Amino acid sequence: MDTDQLKELVPHYLAMIILVFGVLTILRTAVGDLGFWGELVVVVALAFLYRPVVVRLGVAPSPWK
Image (tube, rainbow, N blue to C red; front, top):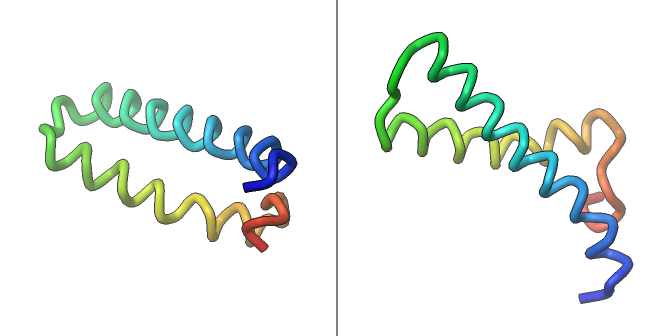
C-alpha cells in the first residue's frame, strides 16, 4: 500500500475509534451496562456507517471514493 494513502486514512481511523469510545461512554452513562453483545452491535454499526457518512459529507479520503 502506498504511504500517501496510509497518511490519508490514519486520521479517519483515529476519528472512528474516538467516535466509538465516545458513543459507548454516552450510552453507558444514559442506559447503563449494555453487556458485551450490545456494545458489539454498537461498534459494528458505527464501523459500517462511518464510511458512507464520510463519503456523503464529502470529506472522505481519495482511496474511499
